[in-house]
Image 1 (spheres, rainbow, N blue to C red):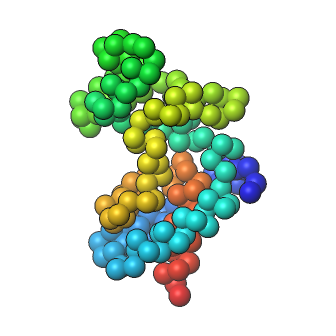
Image 2: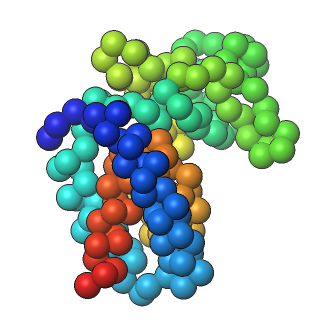
Image 3: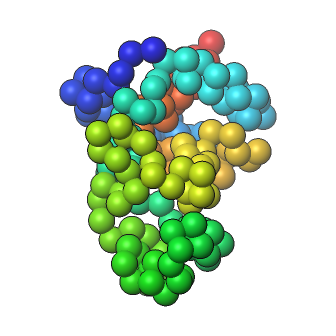
Length: 167
């Protein structure tokens, strides 16, 4: 497994983004019956090729949403009140109705190691990312459309899914 080459990744995204989004849009309108099975197979291959710790782009360029359960769990772990936690690190997005980080990269990311300092209690949005293992993957196709620009694993998954669809 090689570290993520961001220059190469950015070039691939620029070149393939429209085609990938078009492909995912078609899947979104008419998902194949074997989508979950195919993504389950592809996922294993993707994790043989992509090393998240060499990337951490999700933590650098995106923000998770924090559920009330996440806020309670993390604030307890940090020995803070929920109010203190929110005031220090989060803002409420009124449009999306979500609690999100005020900063990017994420305040819990160690930029030297690309490791999360609250990994054991991280938000559920982080622990589920990049959302490949969802029982109804068709509900996450729009999420993958966004994530292909940031996540090499998502990009690779869509690339492999397109290859399977051609055969």
